[in-house]
Length: 195
Image (cartoon, rainbow, N blue to C red):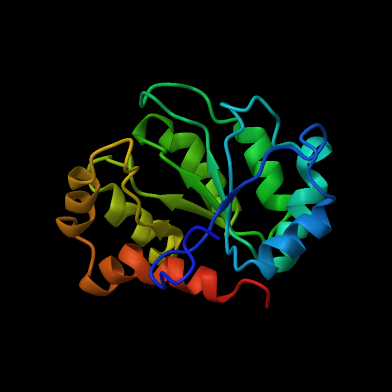
């Protein structure tokens, strides 16, 4: 594994649909992930052109859920106004796999109505902060949904990290909430993998 020996880095595998990629069966793939110390998976449904609906990814999602492996979903948002997240499918995914931590990556303020509606219904949906810049957004999520629902991210090396760092550091959230967002929430998720 490329990050072996680096205690501050954790391997994360990109997971394409298992139907055409030559990957092993879902349970075996997740078993290999756990054996190799991989503690999270990431999917790029828009870039790799596949559905996150259960008819497509259900077996893999169930195996990830059983292992409590966090799933980072990245729809490759380029602009805050893009309507690219399939909210019905995301809602279904989170509801059918309630013990699977699902982290929505690079989400912005253009879809707050849909995002907050899904977060209200699904405790397992978390939000990565790299592009989340609504006015007092960090504070609002902490108050409405709990400070455990945010994971710090920068989008580096594609994006510059100063803005996301300032967004959390200068927010009106409590110091304890900032500590959770900045790293403790992710450490808690990673510690639960395989249990």
